[in-house]
Image: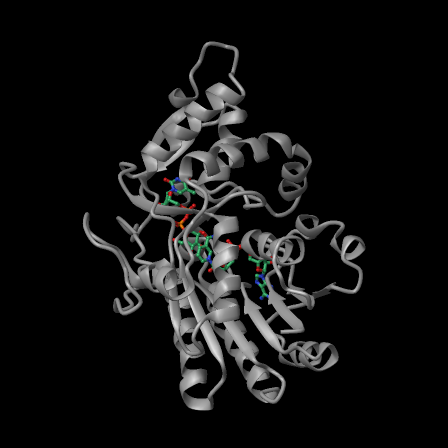
Length: 349
Ligand code: NAD
Ligand code: DAU
């Protein structure tokens, strides 16, 4: 792997992955980052990398749905592997306006696959990043395995499920060397503050309400983003071609409990000073339509085949993350100056 195309490298996980590859991993090649810079893409996430890693990081602004542009990226940069993050990623937005999700997540993935197929002589790996949400919702017990049937609930998860099927079909039909990973909820630095954890930190710091959808008993399994990046790189290097790997954190928590924990960390890190506890900002609001009750990942395959396991616990990772947001007010100002809106379930009408 000498010339890696990373799509969506200016987003949350993509930017953490690019940093991880250049700063921490044994990858010695060059990264070409293709990103359209939607509201969720922020070049500031990768500021300074060109200078620090001369000749090893290139940014190309563009749309993964644009076939001729993607063709030129493969040809001009001699792309020999792909790590595909680019997507519309926010479930609430997919409920209000699904069009962009169908376009980017399905047509965009198809466009990349077609160009990978057209350059099959040079492409040695196409790694596709996906989500636990393709499996649907769990009851109180059990966990998703790689053979759990797909049952997506939202337009977002349905579009991701569709892209997963396309990637597997290109392996089966055309022999494209692919790997896939389906991961649980990520958190950490550079996450756009529409997602639960950064939204709660920012709202709390401004004394704004902390909206909990429904009764707050939904369960998510949280994984620190650097652990996700470690897993992706392990799969790209050593994963079986054609295989899917589940990735999870083994850190399940109900949404309400998680928000209360964030409030408690903030009490220690930045007490309000007016005697009003952060927890008093919690408000129960209208539920997300089709809200999945619980996700949990069985990642035995990744652990046994590749020896991967999470290094960060939710306790340590959450505190690190809260501190990161408290210390990066310039970054917050920067992402908010774009087309940013905080999502509240009132938008569901
Ligand atoms: P994000 O929304 O933070 O970033 C998405 C990036 O893709 C942005 O930089 C955006 O500009 C870019 N992009 C969007 N449409 C594009 C297009 N048409 N062409 C080129 N670039 C485009 O997303 P994220 O949270 O970093 O998620 C990255 C990937 O990981 C997604 O595929 C998502 O489905 C998957 N995933 C996310 C999580 C999570 O918890 N965030 C968990 C599992 C899987
Ligand atoms: O599970 C992996 C998925 O995690 C990824 O595929 C998605 O790209 C990513 O956005 C994330 O989806 P979720 O819907 O789980 O994440 P979100 O942060 O939007 O919400 C987490 C939980 O918190 C969910 O149960 C809804 C709830 N929630 C969310 C927000 C934004 C609230 O109660 N209040 C809120 O304001």
